[in-house]
Amino acid sequence: MKENMITRTKSVETTKEASRICQRLFPEWSKPPFMGELQNLILLGRDQDLDESQISRTGMWWMWARGLGIENTITRETKLALWKTATVASPNNPINIVTTRSPELLHAVIGNGDPSLPRSFSSLETIRDIGQRSNDFIPTEITIVFADKAIDNFEKIAASCNIQEKIEENIQMLRKFCLQLRIPNAGILRISDLSGLLGKLGNLIDETGMTIVHPTISPEGWKKIEIAHKGSIKSQQREFNWNELHSREHNLHLATTMGLVGQAIKQTIPNAVMVHNEAFIERGALNNLFTPPNDPLPVICLNDLLKNKKAKL
Figure 1 (spheres, rainbow, N blue to C red):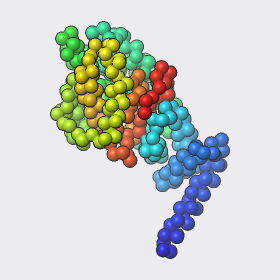
Figure 2 (cartoon, rainbow, N blue to C red; figure 1 turned 90 degrees about the horizontal axis):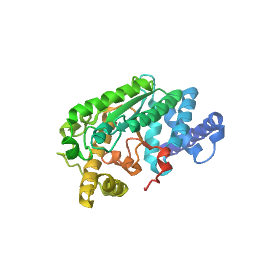
Figure 3 (cartoon, rainbow, N blue to C red; figure 1 turned 135 degrees about the vertical axis):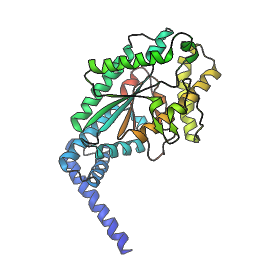
């Protein structure tokens, strides 16, 4: 009983000290909900032996980062994952801003895109700006994950070109964009090169999105898949003339792929923070289909996506 009282006393004292530090370092945010969030971040920073200068930069990073994301997509678990990631970041262990890019050049082959890849360039420009701003606060790197698996309309594209040659050409164009945008050190990985708990993804997923493994999907996961399906079907019917069954099957395969990719990114890329920057906002949740609910890959769905669409969560 006495030990429990001592523990509670220390906890109260620690919280009070975090509150005092918060008011001193972040006077403009010393009110709910910001104060509680910053207090939690301060406590995590103290666990990592951060000094007040480091805590200040980390807190400023968090207040900037929380403004990037769509409010109702940043869960309590995501916040905690972001705080933990920020407090352990260092020059030798930087935050890694991760973004995925679809094979835009393949889509252009069948008339569903521009061969100059304007969407990819614009997306990388956004990620460049995010990475630079993040690096103003704490050390940050950028990694691009290229989707060489689960390709929309694969059969039609395969009949029109050599897919592997076009994938390599697409990746080389991304490298060129990175040089133009002055992010030459950005890493580019293929989905097929990632490895997760079940092995190398190139051995688990084919180009169409079919998987040789069928991980268990929780009831909450099925809800996420249904929401993503409803957010995609109209576009798929319009662009590809798919029926309901074709769309549903594709979206299930895509969800499984995204879940495996999210789990692999969390396992293999240190301090990864996924930035979801594609039109289908609802798909952002799919990267955590197979991660522990209380320890997700932190995913930020950018506020800019709401210009034309409201998140359905």
